[in-house]
Image (cartoon, rainbow, N blue to C red; front, top):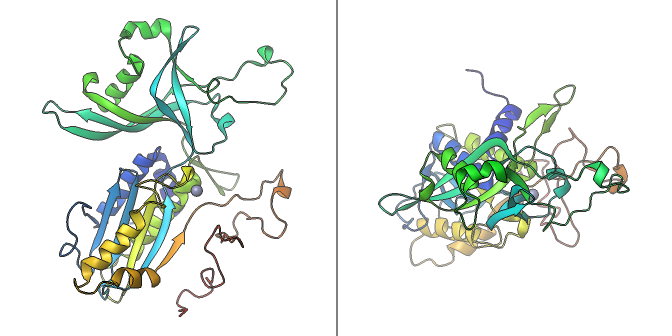
Length: 382
Ligand code: ZN
């Protein structure tokens, strides 16, 4: 059976991953299909993990740790990991999104991360995110919602009403970003009983999930460009998409873990743990329970080491950490053809020239002569 080329698989991954929640669900789906089983952070891992086993767990539905245990792994051995992030700058709905102005119903938005917000104007925008639903028995469940239709728009002011501004677009994120979702005339047909959100928004979400509108408890929704990711360029040489930072590295890390653990004998001689960590909240500083600056990574290192260690040996975590290696995978900005001077002359990332290794003498990256040595993957530094 012919396998789908990587670039086509990545386009599929991108089109399935409108939000960090969708990206993690997609990671989960692919891992499960490849024999990874879910473990629970709230349950003991000692006795649950076995050499040769393949596992994953998620936090907040927006970050995931997946790992395969080498059959020769013993407590204190290292972890070989790839880290990436699931989030991208976007416009998220405010807790009270309901705004009405000049006959329009609009959604109040907050900026997440540092985005080029002018690129969100005059686009076909859908809505997606995580929705909490209450069942008739009172239990709360989370579902993912994806309204793949141009239900929203952030219009720029017509040129006739903004004479003299030329190509300039100054944005006040409080007053310029509310997105139009309906005209008041049409929205009135659905009544207007909501407090925090327009009823028409709740109706859209309920219809998308095929649930009763009253079952919606809360949600975390954002606007999403409905234009699909695609392959472009005269020779199909470009992958054109939003959210490449950092779903590209997430996809590559996921694929690397899955493929390197696929063969029946893949882990037979492995002494380490092979891991993928996809974190949330990189765009806002990573300081959260599901972010890279939170406890997620060290909790994972610690719990894996302890799960295989005997109770009386208390330095397995430190030993394991010192024998581990992590690739922090993220995107680099390729040289802009019209602005090549934006890059330092000898160090501009070129298309089709392979991966970029980021280095910073002030240690914003952990790269040094040893960690950046990719000449020989079998080489060992002691
Ligand atoms: Zn990034």
